[in-house]
Image 1 (tube, one colour):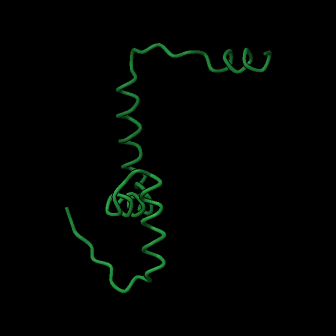
Image 2 (cartoon, one colour):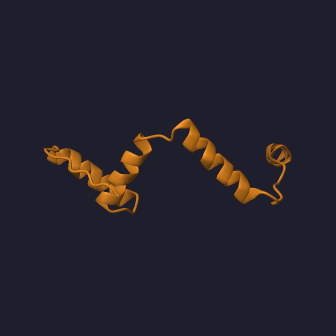
Length: 76
């Protein structure tokens, strides 16, 4: 894994990030990692691999008919 050092952040920015981390029940480092990873989206190839992995994990499982479930919910 690589390491990144960010210098000269405003104290107010760091405090906001700490509050956000506490709200999300994470350490500051974990919160910053989440933010940075979310800012670097998957390439199309990586996305397709992820989709294929999810599809393979769900293969053979029965799923509810969402249209039927939505209709039932609206009728209540």
